[in-house]
Structures are given as structure tokens and as C-alpha cells.
Length: 110
Length: 113
Image 1 (cartoon, rainbow over the protein chains, first blue to last red):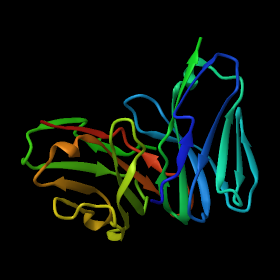
Image 2 (cartoon, rainbow over the protein chains, first blue to last red):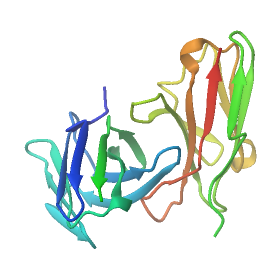
Image 3 (cartoon, chains in turn red, blue):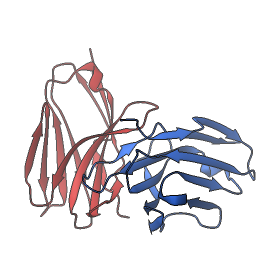
Image 4 (spheres, rainbow over the protein chains, first blue to last red):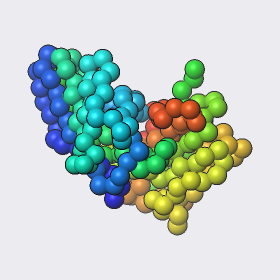
């Protein structure tokens, strides 16, 4: 399978805490992206990191990529109740073909 | 700009019936995807179009699923005949040639009973 796997499957934290979720994949990639999905909604793009990058920031998001370990992590700092959602990594073996992982369900308790 | 439009939002059918989903991508987006998302799982790529040509349909169950993208714009995904295990949300996404970010529609929730 070309899909990645996220862990943990579910994560529950208090508002203000940091949330970290991990993604492991099997094939070589061109880039890796993270998406958020609120319940019953479509997916929203959060951040993209290319295979030659090791770390990227966007607002409260920090993504790291270790191509030697075929893994990535997404850190959300100072979490808010509105961050409650499922988070998916999507690996792109080629330019515009990408495959989603199994997802991490994040619950932020106010 | 308008987002990716999908219809219907919900559909309930009996097994062995046929169903069709429609997607209107963001104007000018050359790439269009159909994903199947079963409850509790990540989206699974069914088919990818580049303009009106198929790039990847390796995970499309071709004995019952078909998809087309006429004139490289709108797309339809059809299931005939439906099985219970086809119950899922069907997501359409589009992407332009200049950026590597996909925009998703709200999805169509299919229930096969």
C-alpha cells in the first residue's frame, strides 16, 4: 500500500497544550502534506513539506520530515478547541499524485 | 473563488441499485481526483484525471465503478451495481498546475442498505 500511517490514532489534550502526531510511509516521496478534516466536512490543506526540506513552520504548525526514516511529524502548539478534527498526512510519490494515511483524531478539551 | 462543488450531499440506495455523483472543480484546475472515505479511515484514491485523461485508476473497482470527465471540467462517478461495502463518503478534489495543494469538496455520503 502507498498509504502512510499516522499515530496515535486518537489524541486528547487540554486547551493550550501542544499536540504531536506522526506519520510513517513506505515509498520514496516528492513531498508530504498534512490535511485537516472537521467532522462531516471535506479536507483542508494545512502545510506541504518537500523531500529536500527537514522542517517547516506555518503559524502554530510545525512539520518535520525525516526521509531516511520515512517519517514526518506535525506539531500544533498552544492548541485551541477549534483544532478538534482529524489530521491526515498525504504522501506524494510523484508531483501531483498523493495518498492519504489513516489519520489521527485530535480532541482539544476547553 | 468558488470551491469544489459536489452533489448530492447525501444518497441512500438499496444494494444492486445504481448511483451517480457529480463534481464541479475549481475553474481552471486541470487535475481532478475522486476519493472514497470509509468511516474511520483515510481517503482512498479511486481515480485521478489530468484534464480529461486518466492518470491513475489502479484502485478503481472497474467491474462496478466508472468515472468520466467530459471536456476536462465536470466529472461524474458512477457505481453500478452498488454493494453494502460501498457505503462511504465520496470526495472530489481539484488542483491547479501551478500549486501542489488540493481543494476538496464537501463530499457525498452514500449509504447502501
